[in-house]
Length: 151
Length: 151
Length: 151
Length: 151
Image 1: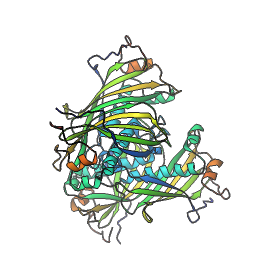
Image 2: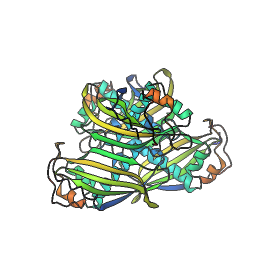
Image 3: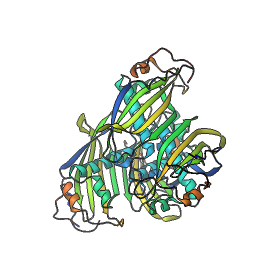
């Protein structure tokens, strides 16, 4: 086990998300499940910004399966909010990556609305875990050394 | 009946929407139901840009209920697409508004992906149809003259 | 053009849908876009009940693209409602099918909440329109005779 | 601190959920965010089965805000799956409840697809944390003794 879970890594990417009307629930705020959508979007943005667009993922028949999430919801998001999602890599193994993510309002980047830790496994065309591809590691600024073990 | 259904009116507002990963369906393109979400978002944007934000709607206990939609899907939208939604008013009655909307790629504003006509009824705190408020008519650039009849 | 748009055909299938909490919008009722989800679900149910499950669709690389919808929303659906979606075939061409669908409360099957007409095009693995497969026509109880033209 | 986090309590309710086509993502399985929707639905079901329907919640101006989730995804859910969500109370404080939930296939109740722990805070009409109402504690079969502290 060499989960390189350092100090949650440097932020590898930022994504902007604007809250849309249909993402509010009957309590008038963004539903907690929608935050997972924002986080997913930001992870794909991180990959894209690092040079690995989603289209490449599809073309190679790869998949990224979320196997664990942990989210603390600290403040509400409301209609009209422009949100900033910061994504960094907090750890990795042979076929999995742990993302650390934070959502804040773009106008108040110090006030965190939600903090998340998401573990995703790379799967190949056969839908079985496979080594996180080199291109992905590069895109995410992951150090090569030190990963081992199975997903 | 004086449905002022002229030449679909001038465009009153444009809204930008970026396709997000979780909006794709199992066919790998934006699901047709998601287009309705984009259209709804753009209608609230039109109101907001005209000076009538959603918060005012909520504060006054008003609702906007969609009673009819008609959408022609002409081209697919895909991940990474930045979409532009154009909204105009195509007609109105005492308590309803007909919106004409178009979705195109922001980079190719002449190529229309979808064309919609959406009829929405204004409801008051008692959830019954009510006269479209003056502030809303102003926000949407609606001419006052000539509307009549019931929703 | 031989669009066999008879009297909206016989109902080929019924699907039950229970309204779930997260399908309500900030007006406290089922969002209009969610009705499209229910309608889609019911169409796949119609295919499944006719002997053509979604898995077969995927296995053959086929897709079903919605190219036009028309929905009249007559009454609200609310949390706890058990809905019944009736699906029939209202017309067809070489590569497209027009579905006529109705949503009512299961407990009051005569009170229609929404009435829809949905045109879907069959696409092959190359994502281009293709003839509606025989197995699908059989599943939907479509008469073979009389269809012609392009989608 | 008297978080009564016993052996995850007895199961207070079961809810059935059928996977619907539009809940699949571009990897062809139920998106991980949709599992949160299922879990939310099952929590409201647990309340309803215990005699406290959602309508009462709305009528009293109460809200239930999720403040923390933790989910382990063990197996995929696919179209056509009928899922069973088991909900129990794993702990509670003055204004919050910790739910322990499990999702399995109805046909294979021993095979768990996902395991979750969800913390929800009760809020009053002023949107501030308030004591979990007695009616809710009864509905969830929560023992009164031993809870203390703030949410």
